[in-house]
Structure formats: structure tokens, C-alpha cells
View 1 (cartoon, protein in one colour):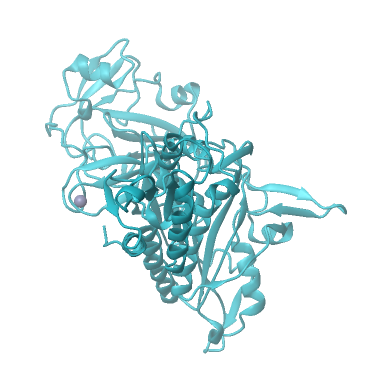
View 2: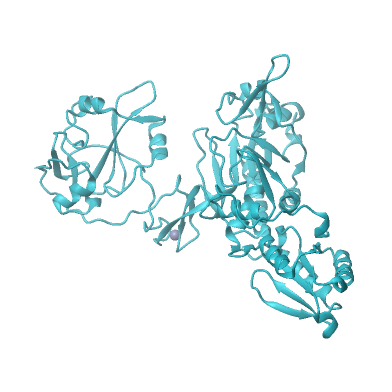
Length: 572
Ligand SMILES: [Zn+2]
């Protein structure tokens, strides 16, 4: 492809609102342009990268027996009413000209279950893997980060249909293998982490996370083993704190102390030797206040508390706290509760045997030596955030926390959709049974943006070879260089190497700068040296290293480099 025939509007400066590195560089390098909040066009270079990512996904999905199809974005509302998801806030709702309700879909579980209900009759029709690569619409409240969080995007979503749970497990394992290959082939750094199945149930889920400061997720990683989990799920061993057991329970005046830090300072103890009281009201029919206890140096994990309660909750109001505990917020604890005033007390297990500082349920007072099991009862359950420097539960190694971009997820849906959508089959025992389903997503744009986040320098993007817009970028200098550049382009084309020739009438300096900004991995310069000593120059974008080649040896050398870089890298 000749530069003089392609749209490549590079810019000196990034848009003022661009914070994420991928947002800045993809706009500057002429890959994407915005038309509204969360709505982006891919210009030719950006679309080439997207298509290369899609192709890797397609090849690996086909390799596990996936059957590519295409389902609509516009759905009749009835399908979503049937599954019980009609009304979720993330969706776009609309009516047609005669007033029928429709939705713009963001996922296709309902449609898949609908097709399964019509097409799958017998156990002989199973298993199936169906997928498509399709536009998704999402009424995103905070579009940001360029193409990282948008209102319209393309996703590969695949679905497994199986006869039983072990079939679902097999389909899930196939996707784990395919996903591992897809992300490795794409050239990005990633982790597979345990993730939360949410309130919707399901029996297992993993997320694929690309570490990047632009990511909105946080993952916990172990320095000693391969433990990796979303902070939503992570478990860890808390840093040890020494607390004496069997101390007498003593009440101490703590006037004007409102924070854990001030309390620990006043009493001369570690913050981890205090108990933090969090008082909430579950949003269920039973009502009443619940007291959740975490160590003073820990943070309560809202999702874990929600799971422990089996419902959402809100913070208790000060008057509810006074009514239940007989004291002001700040002096609340688990000892000496009035019978029936508190529905339940939960305690994080990092509060071990021994005496802790606790609120006395008397305004302006705390208790020293409060011991779980001796002075109060509570249900032990994991309630806290894993913290950096906690220890790994598997190997004892040190944990650390990184920001990451979610690039894919895999989810065992089980019977969540097949039952309401009546996707059943006749088993060999003559019984009609619901189909077991799994759902598996990948966002090509997230892979594209993650690559830019992970691989760039002060001059621009450094694409992994497999998803670069072109394999080789040629800069011919002077009119005499055009013919040899076309010749090299033609020989490389026969070897399957895709070439971009920057034949624009601009100074070599400007074109070199653009080449670095756009980030094609291999750059060839054809200039005066061809006349003087019969050679051309190859420059590697990532390392900056150069090689001197003759035009005769260049095609084989370049083709070999491209092939080596696209080969599946070893397991990280
Ligand atoms: Zn570990």
C-alpha cells in the first residue's frame, strides 16, 4: 500500500481530554477518531489492527470447533423479558414505528438460548460451540479511555451448549486453551484470574487481564506462585499482628477519638490490634441492622459483605445506630449487645484469638481485650480486601496489586438461560432436560488498546508483529528509490508479508517520525547507500537496532523475521 493513497492523519499533539496512553497515541497516529461520547470510527490503520486481532480470534475459535455465525444487534424485547433481564440499565431501549419494544443488545445469551430451543432436539445434537464477531451496544454512563470504554464496540462472543455439567466443563476447558493461544499470539502480557460469578449465579468464571495503569480492574498477583485473582475474589493471609490472649476486659475513656489511627495512637497499639465496626442495613424483607467487624488496618469489601448477607445493603443511619447500640457512631462494638437489637454480627477471620480494642457501646469509651468467643459471638466470614504485602494462601509468597484491562472473560452459565428460555433436549433416558450453557467474550478493541498501553515509547507505538497494521514500512528517499521500493514490496507480497510504502513528498525526517509514531515493527530505508554501496537499511522499531542488507537478501530476511515474531511464544 502506498502512503499517498491512504488516509493516515497523524497529529503532533494528543486531544486535551486524553489521559490513557492508548487514547493519546491511537488518535495521534491516525488510527481512530471520535464522533461522540463513547463512539469511535476506526480509520484504515486502526481497522487493519482490529481485523488482524479478529482473525487470530477466528482461527483459534475455529480450531476448537467453533461455528461462526451472525446474530442481529436489534432484538425483540420479548426475548429479554423471557430471561428476566429486560430493564437492566446498561441497555438501549427503543420502539419501532408501530410501537413494538426492541432493544439494542450488548450480549447474546437470550438469542443463543432461543436458537437452541428451536434447533436442539436430542442429546445427539449436542455438544455445540456457536460464536459470532458482532457489534455490541451499551448505554455506558462514563465512556472514557478512547476505545477502552465505549458505547458501541465489537466483541467475539461464543457459547457452548452441552448435555450435562461435565460437558460444560469440557467446553470451558477448550475455551481456556483457545484464549491462552489468542492472547499469546496477539503479543500482549496477560493474566488469567479467578473472577466473581456475580449475583446471577453460575458455577465458575475467569477473566483475562492485561496489566496497564489505564485499566479499571485491580488484580492480586503472587510473587511466589501463579496465584492471580480479581480483587473482588482475592483471598490472602493478613500481615500478623501480635495481640495478647486472655487479657481482662477493660473499659477506657476515649473522648473525641473518631478514627482508628487516633485510637491506635492514643492507646499505643498497632491499628491491626483494633476492630473496625461497620453497621449496615440489608435491603431485604427482614430488615434490621448488621454489625460487620474487620481489623482496624483493613478495608471492608462491599461485594464480599453483600454475598455474606445474600442481599444488597446500605450504611445504617446515625439514628438507627443509636437505637440499636445505645451509643454514638464511633463507639460501637460487638460486646454487650442488647438482646434482639442487632440482627447479626459478622467477623473477618483475620481477627484471630486474642484481645482487640473495640467500641464499648457507650459514647466516648472503648474496650481493651475484647476477645471473639469469650466476650462476644460472631459468624466468621471473609469480609476484607486483600492488601499489598499480604501473604499468599497457597505458597506464603508476597502478594501485590496491579491495575489491569479486562480483555476477555469465560463464564459457566449453567442453566441460567436455558430454563427460562425453554432450551431443552430429549436425553437418552427419554427425559426432557435443559441445555447446559457457557458464555465466552473477547473484546478485540481491548486487545488493541492493551497492546498500545503495554508497548510504546516516547516516539510512539511499538506494535507486536502479529497485530501491527503492516509488517514492514518502507521509506524511499529520492525519486531513484521508488522503483527498488516497489520491487521489494512485490517480492515481499509473494512471501505473504504486508508492506506499507511511505512515498509521501515529505522530508525523510518527518516520515521517520511518523514511522516511529505509527509503530510498524520493521522499517526499511532505501536511499543513497543503494547507489554508493548497493545496500539498504533495516531498523527494528522495538530495539532501535539496524542491519545493512542487500536488496537481494532483504525479502528472505524480512519474511523470516515476521514469521519468527508471529510464531506462538512460549508459555509465559
Ligand atoms: Zn503464591
